[in-house]
Image (cartoon, helix red, strand yellow):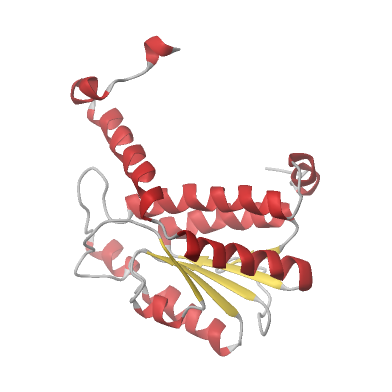
Length: 215
C-alpha cells in the first residue's frame, strides 16, 4: 500500500487530472482549519434540537447547479437519519413554515434563484441555515445560522449560476465553484457523522430507512 502513495515531490510528475485531485484534496484539508467551529456547532445544535422537538417538521435543502447536487446528497442522508427532508426543485416539495428549516448552499451567497427561495423561507418564518464562502453576502445577511465554507477567493463578475452557464464562463483546474462544492460535500458528510453520534443512530438505523426499491 505504501508503494502506491504519492509523495509531494512526485506530484509535479503526475498527469494533470491526478495533480488536480491532489490540489483539491489538499485544499479541503486546509479548509478544516478555516471553518469556524462555533458556526458548525450552531448548525448542529439547530438540527439536533429540531429532531428532538419537532420531528414531524420539514427540512428543505436548496442549491443551484453542482451545489444543488451536493444538497441532494445531504438531503438523502438527512432522510436516512429520520428527518423529513426535501430538495427544492423536486416534484414533491411541501410548503414550509414556522419551526421548519431551510438549508441554502451558495458559494457566492448571491445566486438569484437560491437567494429568492431563501427569502421566501424566511417570510414563511422557517429557520435558515446558509453555507456560503461570504458571511456578508445577501444570503449570509438573512440567515439565522451561517457556516463559511472556503472556496475560491474571488468569484466571477457574473455571480448568478444560470447566467454563467448561458455565457459559458469557465476557468481552468478548479473552474467556477469546484473548490466550494467539493469542500461543502465533505463538510456535510462530517455533519452527518456528528448527527449520527448525537442522535445515537447506527449505520443499521440508516440502512433500515435506505431505499429498498432502486432504479
